[in-house]
Figure: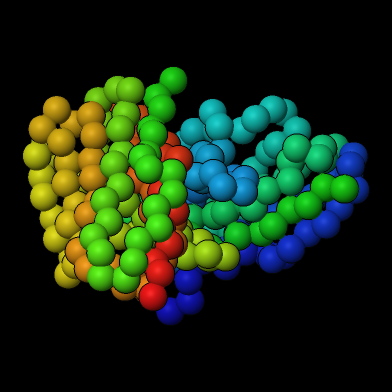
Length: 115
Length: 111
């Protein structure tokens, strides 16, 4: 079956603009994670969902960042008033439930560049 | 907050040499997952360790969890060019499913 997909693969925007990044998890995976990865760094946790609800959004850097998962499948990460410091690769991962040991399957990421 | 450090940051080895990366935490680790990220790629799950002192093997890869659950290691025997990439450890913060990733070790294998 298909893996985790993310669109777009690349997004270039101007400072101050609004962007939406989409994640399509593996079918049947109830848990979905968003991470941000800067060059040379490890993935930085942003938020995770179990089903439709955000179980932990403590990693969102500020209120310009928001994520939704209205039907418990596809998720959208929304960034308002983008800043140059938001430039990074945004990774989505899904797993079959939330449990100790649940293997996370990562998507290819969206590379966001804010000019 | 919890910090997960990995050493070394970079490692260059000749093909056939062994390689080890260490994952150290400022707090007791809950469970450790190891991931490999190829250049330009995304992290791929390798293995999970849960128990104190646990050792797991996958072909040439040996993963170990420290007795005190404050560190973990990944050892690769006789590296190959296909081992090139960055290796990350990740731990959940106690009581949650929020994963904190380590700083990573970038491995280059010279043929």
